[in-house]
Length: 209
Image (cartoon, rainbow, N blue to C red):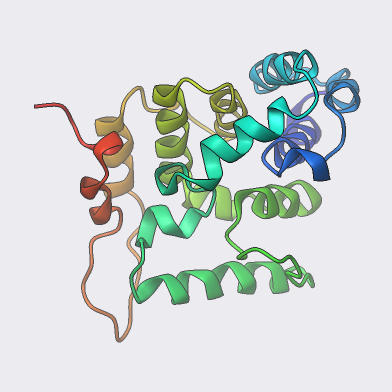
């Protein structure tokens, strides 16, 4: 399996991997889903699942909590990366809901509509990768943050980014440059805030002096 069908499987499996482990399909079953996939994005995902399958019970859940629940700088909410805790984030969340409704879908999860697993599930089901492409800098910054943290979850983000066109930025400066060169966004009635500007406040995402 290759092409769009392979990308859809990778995204669906990645969505499972990025949810809290006790609510997901076992790693061995996810690995089986990837078996027919012939896409470069599947390799880092297989690596993550191989590690996850070898962990003792409860260890993957412990790692998930340590990586994601207590670290906003590893946020799985895409609009946080672009808008932080600003007024414009509400408008960003509405754009996610509108994208779902355009495909006759409603977001019914307990989380926010920009939660990456939900976006991946939506993209896998519809083939519409607009939300992922629009938030490519956020995905790359999260990938780099997880890589610097040394967690295997970085492999899951590497897989997601590999389903998108073009190479991934090699460092934070390149990822932020990608953010600055992205399509302009219209913020009617809001303060003129620079997307990603709040990231300079995060120690993990500032350039070394």
